[in-house]
Image (cartoon, rainbow, N blue to C red; front, side, top):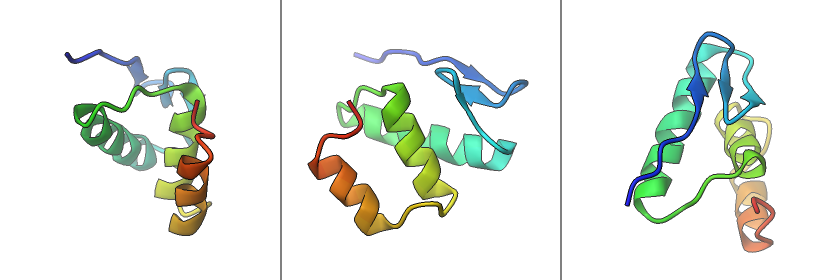
Length: 73
């Protein structure tokens, strides 16, 4: 089953999470879509983590640590 998420390209937000630019928003939206096909249910915290990874704010190892800790819930 597919659940839609709120993406606002005008205000640069996904589920209320703010983005600095459209490129980062679209990269995060693409990553979310891929993960949702695998069963991931996005939360605002999960979107923040993916956004920070896509923008280079956190490393792959940090993102993996967040996933292992289930910090995205």
